[in-house]
Length: 205
Image 1 (tube, helix red, strand yellow):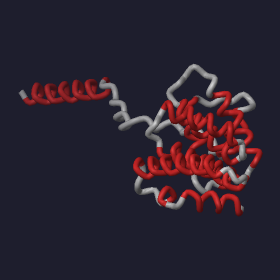
Image 2 (tube, rainbow, N blue to C red):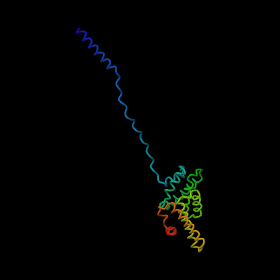
Image 3 (cartoon, helix red, strand yellow):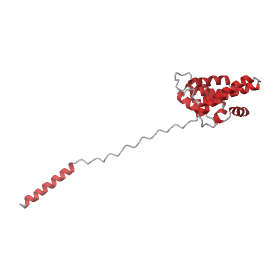
C-alpha cells in the first residue's frame, strides 16, 4: 500500500515537471505605445522681405498669402515704406497676383497697390487703384482713409496753384472719405486726425 502511494506521488511530480517545462514563456507585455517619430526640423522663418524676394524667383505665393504679406509690410508706421527695393518688389508681386483668376482678394490687392503708388507719389495710379478697391469693397476704412489723403493732397496742389474752386472740390471729397473711414472704424486714432494736418506732416518729411 505504501509503495502505491509513493509511486502515485512520484508520477504526479513527473507530470507536473513535464507540464511546467512544456509551457511557452509569456512574452513581455507590449509597451503602451511606440515612441513618437522624430519631428522634422522646421524651416527657419524667413522675413517678409525675404519671402517677397523668393516669390519673384520661382517660389510663388497664393493670392491669400500675397494679401497677408502686403498687409503686414504696409501697416501704418511700417519701416518697409522707407525701403524702395521692398516697395518695388511688392508692387511687382501685387501686379502679378492681380492677373490671376482668383478674385477673392482683389479688393485688398488693389488697395495695397494704391497705398504703394500713393507713397511713391504716383497719384494718378493711386487713385485708379484705390477706386478699383472701393468698387469691390466699399466698406474698407483704410481704402477710404487713403482716398481722403489723396484728395487732400490734390486739394493742396490746386491751392498752391491758385485754383481755389478745384482745391475746394478736392478738400470736400477728402472730408467725405475721412468721414466714411471714421464711421467704419471709429476706434482708429489715425482717422480722428485732421486730414490736412496729416498731408502737411507728410510733406515735411
